[in-house]
Each structure stands twice: as structure tokens, then as C-alpha cells.
Amino acid sequence: MSKFKVVITDYEFSTLGPEEKVLSAVDCEFIKTQSSTEEEVIAAAKDADALINQYAPISRKVIESLPNLKVVARYGVGVNTIDVDAATERGVVVSNVTDYCMDEVSDHAFSLIMACSRKVVLLNNEVKAGNWDYKVSTPIYRLRGRVLGLVGFGRIPKTLANKAQAFGIKVMAYDPFVSEEVAENAGVQLVDLNTLCEQSDFVSLHVPLMKETYHMISDEQFKLMKKETFIINTARGLVINEKALIRALEAGEIAGAALDVTEEEPIQKNNPLLKMDQVIINPHTAWYSEEAQLELKIKTAQNVTDVLSGYYPTYIFNKEVKDKVALKEKNEESVSIRN
Image 1 (spheres, rainbow, N blue to C red):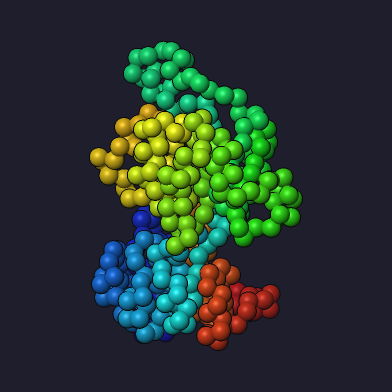
Image 2: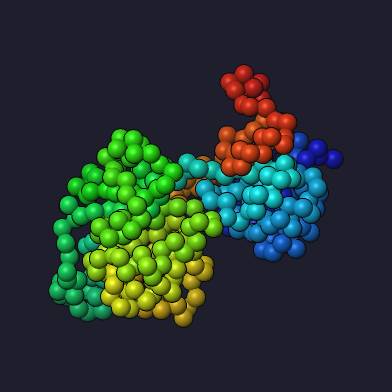
């Protein structure tokens, strides 16, 4: 009988081979499930030591129903599927992977900025519909000298800022947790959210979903934006009040939107955004490349392996849990011994 039980709550990958290879370093049973509710997770993982999670809810009820639980490792940067407070109270480590798709998301966000700026999707659709006429895309403005406003200034938006600046785009950012010095070193002007909304030609969202960011972009913010402004979202759909976005688009308060994420995923077929020519919608794919997917899978499984081996994982989200658990910090000596 294996010493540990690791349960994957849900996944959309064609193979779990990379995870199994990493987890082979510890004596564990790896259980694969496709759970979508609290009850299904609890039933599948009642004696689990570790959970690997994609979309299934890891609520307080789930955490309190799993007495052996030591770690919840989430595929991705955000941990909005997990009740982090409940996990911390119970001494459960929550881990994520913060650096696996920095280039992918920043590339995707910039691709959406370019597509909005040059009206690429609109022109493509018009040509395929038999209309060979550039005037359907007017107005188009020169990209150099435009202003990109970044809501959030973590790793991904910092990478995006560098790429945008190479095209002659001015960059400003709103992030109350970032210092003036950090922004200045990146050549970025730090401003408040209202100023960013008023002055930006492109507003790109890069914040996690939590109480403070839920619907942080709503009617008030859209009314501050210029009619030429495009909003780009590669973060989480619920950061934008979608009804307010629809109102702003219908009223011509902003020029358009490019969304890799929506409030409800998959987006409902009757959503008005689907019929708007000035809106680009992708199926939550900004994170994806073959390389990023492999890196995500390996690092997520390594977070579990670290905890079950008695170490804090490299990517620990709830650092406050260190007051409740007796794990060791990883160092070169411990890593060499384990390898």
C-alpha cells in the first residue's frame, strides 16, 4: 500500500504522463478523477494527502472534509478555485505556478492589442464576406505614440510593457502594491485607476480574481475612457462587469474589446458580445503553448512532491501557513539529496 494518496480533481489534458513521472519520486497512489462539484471532490478524495486542481471547487467544505490533506496544487497562476483562508487555517499548503506562461500571455495580450489597432479580424471577416474595402476599418490610428494602460504590474504585464515599448507605445500602470521605483526602472508611469482609464488608448487587465478585483472595471471606468479606447482582458472574466461592458460598447463609449476570458466560460450562445464586430473573443487560450503546458504540469506536480517529501514547495501561495506546518526550506543540499 502506498504511503500517500494524490488525487487530481479534474483536468483537460490528453495525458498526465509528466505529472506521473514527477510524482514517482514519492511513494504515492495517483488517482485521476473528473470532479466538478464539492460533493464529487469529497467523495473522490476523502483520504487524500494531496490534491492537484484545475477548475473544481476546493471550498472550505471540501478542505474540512479531507482530514489527511496536506497540499492543494493548482494548475495556473490564479487560485480562485481554492478557499485559501480555509486551507491556511487547516495547515494546508496552497501552491500555484507563477512563471510558466509569462511570454505566452504577454504575447497574446500584445497580439490582441495589434489586432484591435489594425482591425485585423474585422477586415478578415469583411473580405471573406465579399467586401474588399479598407474603409470599413476606419478609423485606424498609428500605434507609435499610443498609450497602453496596464491594470496590475506583476511579471506578465512587466513583460508586456517591454514588448509594447519596442513599438513606440507609452506605458502606464495601476498597481497599489508596486513602488514608484519599480515602475520607473521599467520605464512605466505609475498612476491611479481613474487616470489610467482616462488617458489610455488600450487598457489591458492583469490582476488575479479576488474580492478587491471582482467587477473592478464597470460603468464608472468605461465612462472615463476615450471613445477610441480598446479594453483587453487576458486575466479573469469577472474582473470586468460584462453587462457594463456591453452597455459601453452599445453606447459607443469605447471602441472595442478583445477578451481571452469571459464571465461565464464557455460563453453562452446568446451573449450579445458574440454579435459585435468590434469584439474579439478567444477561448481562454492566452496561457497556452506546448512548452508552457509541459512546464505547468511538471511544476504543479513538483509542488506536491516537495510537500510530501517534507519541504515547502518553490511556488507557495499561502506563506502564512508556515506558522502551522513543520516543513523544511529547500536548499541546494536538500535538492541534491532528493535527486
